[in-house]
Length: 324
Image (cartoon, rainbow, N blue to C red; front, side):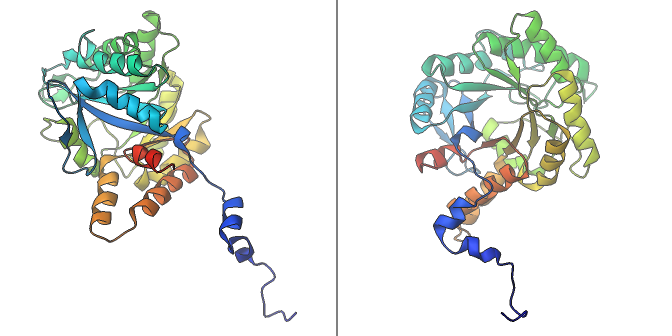
C-alpha cells in the first residue's frame, strides 16, 4: 500500500453505533446524579421559576409526593433547599427542630427511607439580609457563623439527613460541623463539602429560585473565579478538616479545576451544574439554537470526563424520565 495513506485509522472504531458504544470511554447513570430541589413553606401549589424553565418551588405539603415520584423514576438522591418565610439576621429557623431545614429532611426520609437526602447547610435563604452567615459591621462574621452551621447540621442530621452539605464558604466550616455532629452522636453522618465554590455570575437564577434577599455580593467569602491554585488549596483544606466528599461549583466553566482536584485528592468528587448553566441550555433550546437532549448529555459527560464522580444537576429528573 502506498505510504500516502494512513496506517493508523481511529475512524475504524467509529464507523457504526455499536462500535462507538463499545469503545466509549466515559459514561454516567442515575447513580451519578443528585437532584437539587426547592421547597417553600406556607404555599398551596407549585410556583414556576421563570429563569429556570421546568423547575418549580415545591409546596412543603406536596414534598412527600414529589420524593415518591422521584424514587419511582429512579432518582437516588436529592439536595434540599428551603424557601423560608421566617427570616431573621441569623437564620435561626435552620437549627430549630420544627424549622424548615428539619422538616424537609424528615418528610423526605419518611416518604422514601432509601432516598439519600443531602441537606444544603447555609443561611442565605433564611436571613433577612441574604448573606450566608451572621453580619457584624457589614461583614460576615466567620467564627460566629461556624457555631450556627454546627447547630444547623445537627438539626438536619437529627431529622434524618444522610449527608450534610455546607455551602456557606466559611473558613473552617467542615471542621466545625464535624465536631458538632460527632459531639451530638451523629458520627455516621457524612459531609459533602462545597469545597471549591466560586463567586460565580452563573448563580443568577438560583436567587429567584431561593427567594434571596441579598444586596451586594459574596466575593469576600466565595472564591475568585480566576484563581486555580487557590481552588485546589480550598478543597485540600476541607479534606484535612474531615470532609467525606468534595465539590466544585459551578461545573461547566471549571472543568480544569475538577481535573486538578481529581488528581490531588482520592476523596469522592462531585460537581454542581448550577442554575445559570441549566438556564443557558434551556433558553438556547427554546430558541431552536441547540438540541437540548444532546447538549445536556454532552455537558454532563464532560463533567464526568473531567473527573467528577457525582453531578448535581436540575436535569436529573428529565434524564430519569427519558430512561437516561
